[in-house]
Length: 584
Image (cartoon, rainbow, N blue to C red; front, side, top):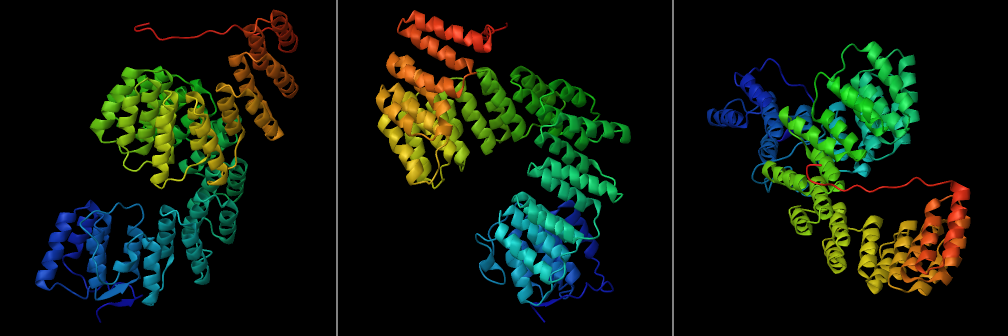
């Protein structure tokens, strides 16, 4: 009967000669060959009642990302069983669909626009009285993760419990992963505890859940429990544990895992090697990270990213560039993380030529649409003094997110283009992107450096009243700096006295800087007494106060403050500055 569904398995006795050919096309992703076989079957009459043929054709179309053909075939299938539905539902996971357009009529068209397709097809499948199995639920939960839909995922979880799959390890792994991605570690642990028979995959998912959410202690607790159950870990187990040692900021734990691996694993694979490099890099041990990297027999892009990010984090842009060149010589193609990290390193050193070279490579490689690269290019060009190129990089981002908008506003603020920064912020609001606290921090800084007092006050009030964002110490500091720089010291001092007490230390420093700028000794002394009582051991406060005395030529006061600083903190080390000279 056309359009009917069944839970019966495919009949193995009804073999069709085209079946192996379709399987081969699906395995190789040969869409053209599969379409030719499909056309041949239609013309010859084929075996219209062979579910196996249709299911393998579905698999071919889904694997090749041809959604419209797959859904049209599903709509026209005389019979559909659980494998038919699973093929489509699981095909939605991690697939980027191509093709003309989705059919406008038929079985599935109403479920396609702005919907979690996996969850929608689960509902349609059950309406046709087809009972979902473990594979169905695993696929549905994975689509909920990709669609950032925790509510749908919870609904799928409730349904699978009702159908008796709560103790299934295969489904449980997917559900734990769902809760891990949304930070619901307690729910993930409840799912884990419900499963009595646990394989290595399930243990790994639970360890990864804790590692992903920065709960290193809990991750190591699961590992100990896993060892008590006699389960040996694999590369993914130990890579998660190495990441957990980073979240605990414990290089000692990471070293213990590393030593265990050296003793128990004669040859590291690329996953473990990359995790070791990353662990040492995140813990600040650049030397050990480089040694682990150099000892790797095989490296992938993750390995290179780990060591490049390590040098970038420590401010060594020169070495980051050298590693990128080595990467090219090894015929390794850098990804968006590699390029954003190197661009950030070059920006810190203001290496304009290297930034331009990387920008050219990005354009030639077609990577300009990646938001992470666009953000890095905006910041790098701005810090190198090329604000026009920063605007160009921003214009190449197809759909800027809040980070991209913030990067562009920050670039304008860095160049003193306050009005342009405000214009960009207004465009961001009109585009429908919701501002966060960081955007307002950058915006207030732009107003402060451009003397836009009224605008700064307006946006500060808007942040609180219209957007419901609670000001942080940094926001208060920016507003104090805004008023102080513009010469409104009395207003700045009044505002300062109204700030919550836990925020006053950083703000008093900004106020003292404004007093130094305008030579107002009276207000400076009162603020300095309060600041020194809050932070008696911060030498920078004494230095700032001594400079204020020097500005008004009160040398006795300047000497008194310096003597106080020597008594409390001892002699300060002499500082020095670095500049880059070509070829030196």
